[in-house]
Length: 102
Image (cartoon, rainbow, N blue to C red; front, side):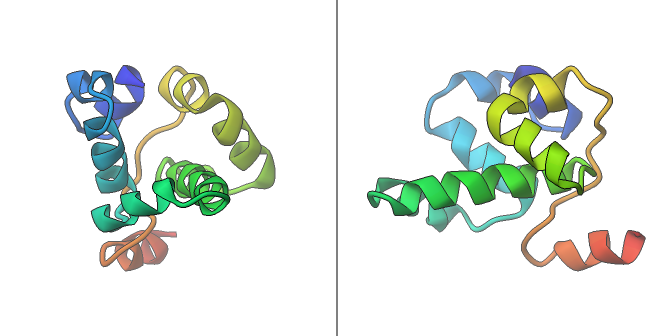
């Protein structure tokens, strides 16, 4: 996760701190931080985690189903050590700028 964070312009050490790494991950994808509470709700947390990783793949410019599956199961390796580059947040108020870029 350290490599993935540094590619996104965040400090690599943030990946080592348990709750803070989720906060930074939300900043990377542009999602509201209050949605972390959804991780505490049974069964909702599964859906939430999957959508989190799909949004992470989109933030790194990966927009196909194979990339989504690879990110869900191997995110730190696929995005951190692969050829993926950070293109910007895929959700939130800055997502429109990303959509207009393509």
